[in-house]
Length: 229
Length: 358
Image (cartoon, each protein chain N blue to C red):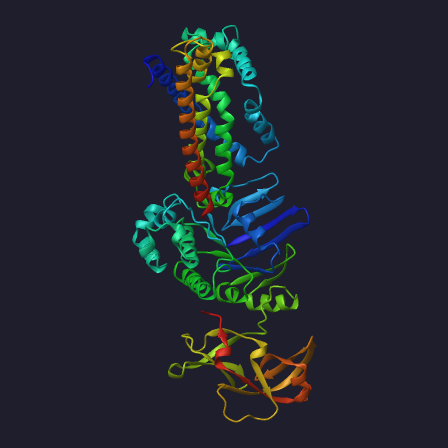
């Protein structure tokens, strides 16, 4: 069983991942909508930008974020002036790092389920009198809902495994930013903690498998839903 | 009702039309690839024309370049496509009630009558993927009508259905036209649908209008234009009802000069015009008067034209004041020694005469 410090690590990991999903699902849905339906040359550029964190080394993404949000950056200073708090090296920074790295997975899952929806259904809805936005809410979003949920569970799972960007932007602070991978890394470098490392690794595998199972089930539902008319 | 002039160029195909119609049902007829569906999509605002001016009952829907372009949702033009495109995540009831305000209209007495009339009552709580093709098309019609549109665009509404379901949908459309008075634009490649439903008709060929007028005229021109989709009905006749013999299942029609045609019974008052289709291969020609046969129509006529088409001969016979066209083989034409001005007997079974006014 897990000891209290490991339970705290698990709790922090789940909290960070839950926040990642909460803050990124709405932007993810809107960006996916643009990518699925926007008829413009700029769509390719937007798609490239969204996918970038997927192919960049997470440490590089973290370094970029640190320059954008760090204490000496313009954004970081403005945030400090407003709130009296720093962003970097906080739980919020861990959420931001994991959200940015998980964003491509979230968007791609939603985009794929949206492109599987017959666009003529949206034309029909508009011909029946609904605006573009209302049509999105009444037709496209419900029909791609399983894809949205699958994207959310992927982003959640990805956050549980986030390491590179987090350690650069949020550091490795016990109780604040040290989630499972950071704890494994820390314990690995301290003698006598092999059993704890194994337990945390096992926990990671279980959480990842659970997330993948949920994602797969939702994706199947998305296909079934889009396949009928 | 509608006045439209629009141009749109795609690679390899261009749509260039200019028409005005009082409807209330405007048929758009043509072979596949003639631009019928593109025209419909342009009217609905689903595609952006290069140049267009579209007015519906005096309201400008589009005037480009430079002017108005009403968004799709502001046009009040509902579309019923060939594949009914029901919303798969909604029940039949939720599909019917989909349009803004349609829920209330569905609950009103008129809405309830419409549900009853579309035979959708028992299906209201069903999922759309459990419906048959005909049922789905009826839901699509109801959904469009309950949106209270100024115009309904029907894109081959019966094309994907089997014959009996297609007949059912055409009958519903005809009733809708008469009972609910909803203006419609009907795209079809079936002459029977056109004859049954349309008041005015456009014939489209390669993105251009080549004829406009009453369906029967346009269909004749379609034949002259050799429209690919021409369905092989050689005789499209508009004949006056003389009298009925309901017991025998007959309606007698006037062929002029005292000659009469027996058609299957149709409940239309004498004096009304009934449109009839007869295939050329259903006309039997004889040199001498035959004895009693099962055919109700033993007519006398005169050959006015002979034309060889492939292995067949198209024989035009004047019966009364009506020209009928028979298709026979070259061998049969030789055996009868057919020649112009020759007197012939024409036999037609009543069941070969298809009334087009359902």
